[in-house]
Image (spheres, each protein chain N blue to C red):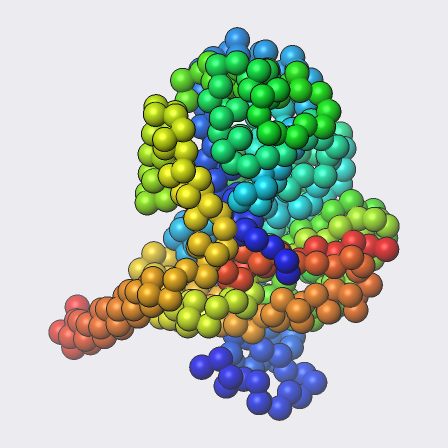
Length: 257
Length: 214
Ligand SMILES: C[S@@+](CC[C@H](N)C(=O)[O-])C[C@H]1O[C@@H](n2cnc3c(N)ncnc32)[C@H](O)[C@@H]1O
């Protein structure tokens, strides 16, 4: 089921939406639709999906960022704001955090959650597309994008845009589903992603199609070494990655020269 | 990449220990103040067997932060085996233990001794936070091994060491023995089949309801 798309000839104006090809300009809308429909249940689903382990992946990602008080951090595709909230505490009152997402519904859930937790003081919410970040050149100390890059149509453009807004020496951290290092693990994971997860999606969020799309988009995402190469092509140096949970996810880090 | 342990597994362990200590500190304001007074302290605990480095940072509000990765300059670096560190953690006289053990130390030992004393003086519930972060099985086993170690001392150290190594090392957890992996795989497949069956039952029911015009 993972190879059906590889051999399809790619016209310039189509791109993958999960495993079905769609027109490039439609994808942004379709992605938005998917996240609109799951936004409200997203945190709950997220916990169920990975039994809370995504918090540990994020915890390590935040350690790797080495963000310090006073810095400027942008969390792209930040969804409901859990990473932004943690950064907000680290950068403190002299720093600034931007929670950026293409989707207004996601940002809305994020805003409510941040207000609930009294964490909005140094956080700005910006609705924008990762492919064209609306921030000045050389203005940001650290960018994170967690489980977001796979949804972006033109990943190379997004990586270049991130490189542009980072300060020299600034870092990018990409946390994303990746290729399990063990073939059996990969198979079990496939079953989980394509059969169990959409089912849970139907029962919990009443929206199996969205979760099937999530599962499919995970499989379309570049593996560890491909993503590393893409980051280097976008101009990042000292690129490296760490596999977590058997390579189900990996966190990539690159520095702007 | 050249890594011996799974960062997510280590993060889970550290998140559990950190939550346990900070919950105890929240109930012991004097201890928390003492910690805060230590100022900017980062301890680097370099364990050689299993090979893993853990960083302990004192936050100004008198809590501890445990990290698997940290770029701050360490105030104190200590290097040794897990047994040495467990002996240090359990010692009634950490300063003497430091001198008599095989641990290699670079930097100021005073904050290390102070933190050890503050934490051992408190009554820390390790189990609940470990279970919260690691799940029932791993969390409970680790907490059990820790309790045994603190109660019976060195006799139980080997068990704790084995548990910890198994937990954080990729060897033990992420390339699990083939049999274990196959078992896991079968379970996932079985759930997959059940999901499929449930799915078609739901569809049958739906068709029946539709037909009945409900
Ligand atoms: C799976 S969620 C991840 C949310 C959060 N970072 C997390 O780890 O829980 C993916 C997010 O990416 C956002 N997204 C999708 N395409 C995007 C784009 N082109 N630019 C910015 N955000 C995008 C979606 O709206 C959604 O909130």
